[in-house]
Structures are given as C-alpha cells and as structure tokens.
Length: 196
Ligand code: FES
Image 1: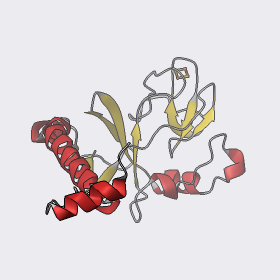
Image 2: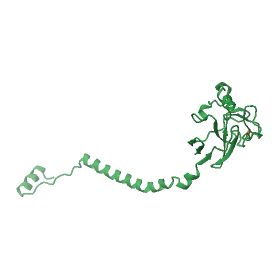
Image 3: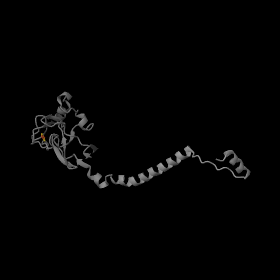
Image 4: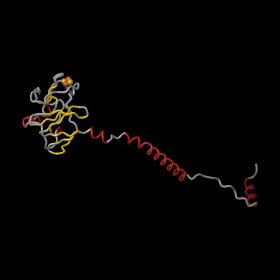
C-alpha cells in the first residue's frame, strides 16, 4: 500500500490539490428538512381546505335551522307548539302562579335538579320554551291548551306512560328520567324569540 504522506508530497510537487472530503453541515441539513416539511404541510392544507369548507352548512341550511316565533298571540296561561328542526317546541306564557310554583321548588324535590332560573331567560320568567318530547320514550306530552290534562304539577302530562312535568318542564312523576330539554333560543325583541 502506498504511503499516504509520500502520495501527498508527490501531489503537492505536481501542483495537485488534495480532494476535499464533503462533510454535511447538520444545521443546514435540518433547516432544509424543515423547509420541505413546511411545504408539504401547506400543500396538504391547500388540498384539505376546500373539502373542510364544503362541510360548513350553507346559508339556506342555516336559515332553516333557526325559527322566529312571534309571542304576541300567546295569552297568559296558554302555550303553543311550533316545529323546529322536525321537533315540537312548546312555548308557554306562564301565569304568576305558575312562575311561583316553578321557583319555589327545592332541588331536593326534583329527580333531575335544575332551578327555574337556569331554564328561562333573565327577566323573562313568564316565558318557558321546551323541546316537547318526553324523555322516557319520545311521546309528545300534552298541556299547552287550557283543556289539556296538565298533571298534578300543572305543567305537561305524557299520555303514553303517565310522566308528569311541572311548569318549568321538570319531570316530577313517572318513568321519564330527565326534564324536558330547553332548546337554544334568544329574545330578538320583547315579543319575538329566535330558536336555534
Ligand atoms: S314516553 Fe312519556 S312517559 Fe313514556
């Protein structure tokens, strides 16, 4: 084997520079990898965004998903049923007596404890808005008309298996395991609510 020092000396005499050994700069290499990854991420994002955006509901769907209800025709002591997203919604104009009954209940008396205030809008205790589907097996309770059976607690009565709800829509008797649900809604004016 040739002595490397002799070879180096001969190459120097001939004016040949030794070949440089390439050593990768780890910092530079990592930086290049980062640029590649960032580019890939931007590419995936550009492809995915139109797909994700297409999953947002259209304006038409959003309009159907909310419902405005004029409260003016609902006299004190009566309720109406409107349809929202295929579900019956009870809107009742409660009497002072019904409000008093709803607010004077202690949580210990309820199988699904909830205050009346948590189920009504601030300053609007005369209005109760509920999803009119019994939480037992999904029947529609009665009680919006003055002639309807309202049960012992004066709210709504489910004719299917006898569950009874109070004037806040809280279950007070029967197999129903939970209170009538309160849908999302807001007052747009003192006489108009928007459900959804
Ligand atoms: S569905 Fe109402 S009590 Fe059974």
